Amino acid sequence: MKTNFLSRFPSPAQLKESMNGTIFPDFREVNGHIHTPYSFSAFDNMETLFSMASTEKISLLGINDFFVADGYEAFYYGCIRNNIFPLFNIEFIGLLKQEQKKGIRINDPNNPGRIYFSGKGLDYPFRLGWLQKRQLNKVKKESQNQIKAMIARLNQLIQPINPSLTFTYENIKRRFANDLVRERHLAKAVRIAATENYSSAEDQLNFIESLYGGKKCKTGMSNPAALENEIRSNLLKAGGAAFVEEDESTFLELKKIIRIIIKAGGIPCYPVLLDDTSGKFTEFEADAEKLCLSLKSLGIGCIELIPGRNDFSVLENFVEFFDSKGFVIIFGTEHNTPEMVPLTISTRGSKPPDDFLKRIAWRGVCVIAAHQYLRAQDRQGYVLEDGTLSSNQKEDLADLGQLVIEYFLNNRQNEKGN
Image 1 (spheres, rainbow, N blue to C red):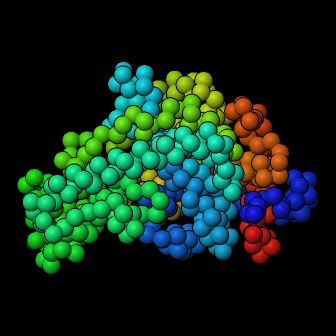
Image 2: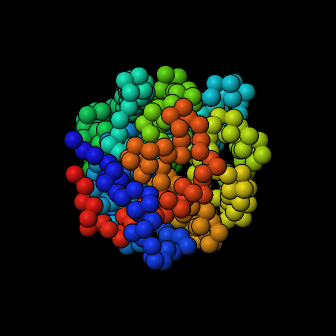
Image 3: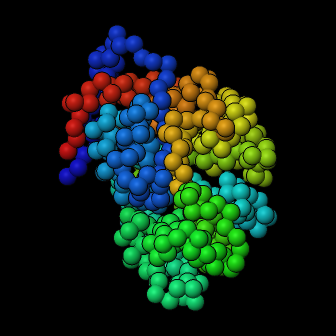
């Protein structure tokens, strides 16, 4: 039976003694939110992910796939081989029905009431109670039913254009996905179908534009990532000819999502969208004070940001405010679109964060590392069993987490795992 590698680490006192005299850096390069091929990812395989991480000298990575923990084992062993500390996370899509009725956008800029929500520092190996497992399996099943309906609509569009070409759920899953098939897999399947069934770029574009109903393709065939985004936008999102609206059963209530995360040993974490390229915010996030109160009322003391989509000054002011309120704050890159961007964190326009932001993000992942470590040692982490936060111990946990990470990075050869 697999055991958590952190269960074999020394006690906190022994850790401190063993690392006595070691000079720690103020911060390390870390990335607390990446998607892998087990949901959808810019990475075609895990090897590419770890090759990039090693090249960029990333010391810590957090897997953050939608709905599944299927990639945990491959992610763990990849981290061990490459001397990268692993965080075990997960992401959900939920629905706040009252906000939906009022037209309030949360952290989805296009869909009022819809909320993306993460769990950080889950137990490894991943385990759930039977009720939470049943709830999660139902959500996954409904999401795949929606995808199958969208595939049927794609086939209806394709039939008059190319009767010999038909998509099946099984084939798309086998070629492009692992467990879950998502919209982005369908967009990739359409792009590749064009290249495999038509020899010239002109004919490939004609096929794509025919699916668009005659609308011109703006990206061309030379930029696969941009083309897949365009296919998804034109065909698979609301208003697109192959779009199928999700059934409400696809979305869990936020309280149920939080319960699943806590039962799995994790920390509930709100992913902040923050400003768009026009400097606008969603209604839920427009007022930082109100957002802070809303999150605290839900028992949420952890937030994460994807700085690549935010203005540097807006991000820094926001982080400074939430840090002053005692929140655990982490950064990531997502990598859940076709574009291959660096794993190293940067803000909009590829502007690097300053030392203040890097230090805050570093302390954040240290808290999560400490939580994973304490849970593995049958101790109390950042979140109690009832969801109560040990927020007054945040700095102590950050110090402990730094010890855990540095011990791991300095003793990997002794931690090969089971």
